[in-house]
Image (cartoon, rainbow, N blue to C red; front, side):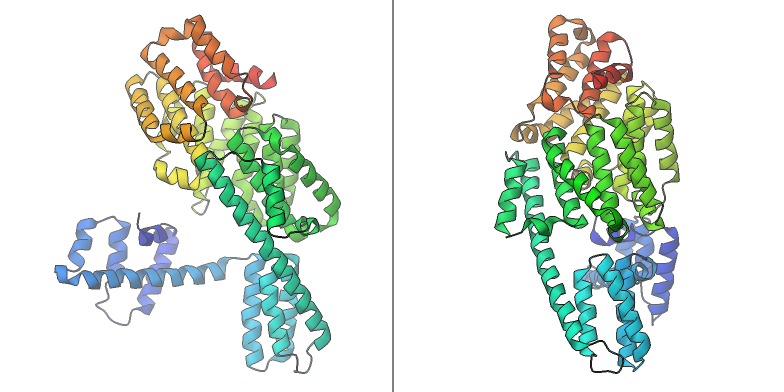
Length: 495
């Protein structure tokens, strides 16, 4: 998909109409073809696009038209985002813009009031770059009547410069760690997370006290969570979980000042305990998460689907399958156009898994709704997610006797991912695939002792004790036990 189409797809139907009106207001001539081009891109009319400019000599004119349409769309999106977004960051920006306008027009008293309010918001949300702009503006007009004391302003400005330097170091360290994790994920690089963290902290000359903010704690926990997911072993990051719990307890009264990061941390803690099969603690963090979400509608909208995903997983793996399925179905039916596609895809694949494990044919329907390309899933959802999605697709088709289709998907999977799995030392996935292939070629093989032994031996590997890995193994065991995979996986999780 080209960049112009990607931008257009960000708009819902109402916003597309608003954009067309925006173009109509801007068009000074009647022969401008931007509205025609927009309609043709929306309907994917390739032949129509060719007719916009008949002669091949007009290729330059066509590309210039596309460029102007894209520029106008970016302008429209920037205005719409600025007008509709009510986060603290945008509130500060709005106040900064209007304060500058007021000062330039000698409306001094109101301007300084706006700047004071903006400064409080910027401090609360730790927006040090914006705070820098605000303080610079105050310094610029410090000679006016009603301005703050210059020495006090200068001291705050210099202190904020220190905060900016600290944040810059933390962001560089975070970017470096993200890059290292990508290499672990895509190249199979062997790294000890704790050693990597210590090396990075030394490299960027970060002192421990600088890590004691909601943002830095969230970043560390996010990286630890990613590392655990790659290694399929959440026990490796327990020390980071314990430190995070201590940090939250120590903060106490400061929760509201860092709401986004606090909710994000609670989400990661709930996910950690879910993956460690401590469902009670996971639910307690989800409750705390929902309590905070309820205090601000912006964050309720942002985190709601992710909260529902973890809530349904907790229910499903504690023997409340019907309730878990209902939560996902309701969440998907109520998900709005502006919901993040990644969140929707997470719910969809989870619902497919629940239905498949319960031997419900509706899982086939859900599979057809996972319509994006593997390349999109790899980029947006990650390699591990995409591999699980493809494996599940093979199992669902096998489960409902679509043997040829399952074999076709299996061969495609092997062609696309075999080298990657070997490179990242994930031979266990290839072993699982071989066992599925044997079942597809000769279903009676599941009753042979050697086959059963190979499957059961997989349960002894540490990386296979995760709830999702156990679900895949349970599917194989269910073939010879003549039960649903759900009835097999529940006792495996409890044990």
